[in-house]
Length: 191
Image (cartoon, rainbow, N blue to C red; front, side, top):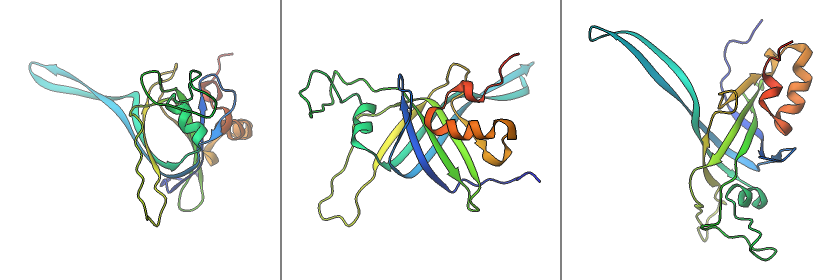
């Protein structure tokens, strides 16, 4: 019997793969992921009266991440690791170009059922923003705002409930998803 409800409850094993990299790296300890994907409304009027409405996805959207992130990934996202600075020094300024990346994560519902999610064409949309609070009893998570853009196939987000995957491709899909997701992994090939 197919599962009819999947309530996203927690995200684990969130990974980032930058353009040109062959393998993803763990993005750290994610506290929350907030996802908003855009749509556009298309209307048709006849004699001034709206007769047809269609709503289509755009492949664009936004993620808000709250996490503890490895410093190397953080500086690479913001383009802070510049060759013009001596080893061990990073900077953020006019020479910093934010790097594009693919973000993947494993999501579970409250019953432990698993879903894979991928955002293949992402980039940070805001500059560096951090807060230090002396005497705090909890280490603050970093907040990142990520633009989700359509990939070469027009998709900004992919997801798959693992139990719904075809048995013949399930193992390959699950094993490849987090480390090296590409649209080729999930699109039907002609032939």
